[in-house]
Amino acid sequence: MRKTIVSIVTVIGLIASSSVAFADTAKPGQSMTHMKTATGVTSTLEAAGVILYVQGGATSAVIGENLSSATSQVVFHIPVTANKAGVQHVGSNIIFFNTANNQYLTLKNPVIDLAKGVVSATVPQAGDAKVDILTITNASTAKAKITNDKKAKQRTTAYAGTTLVLAPGIAATIASVLGLPAGSLPEGLAFGTADVTLYSKLK
Image (cartoon, rainbow, N blue to C red; front, side, top):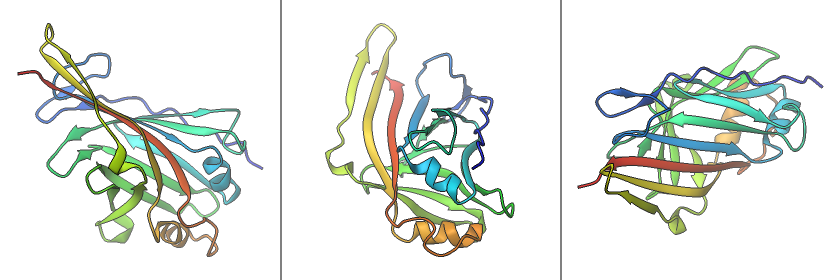
């Protein structure tokens, strides 16, 4: 079994609503999502010849020995910005890549919508359709921890531990686009968890 390691992508920066900010600062308008796959996801994908990584303004790394290890996980650090629909990963793509035939599936600019309990993304391989890719199983109980820094005039809103599973039909879609045998990926596969932190001006 291959021991492919996901490369670490250089962080470009956090995208604010009107300007570019950098990850080593915390200013109003910045935000970040920390996503971690569930144990077993990378080894399940690796067994099918598929690697998972991010591109664009994001970084990824492997926890554990390698992707084929049953206990390994991929951690994503993804810049986001708030919008009317939810929390959008601007300039960041999640990629499923089949090393056997070079087919890949792109999840472009995912949007976390806690109100609807879904993560949607634009999929170029599906005619740029916007598709619900993940279901947030504990969206209705997710509560924000709000911290106000009066000195810095900054409010931090943090959601921790939202749980993600593949949305209905997505496993079959991934398998089809990547040219995998039907049933290669289980429906409703536990994908992982996500923490979302948003920074805004304190009035």
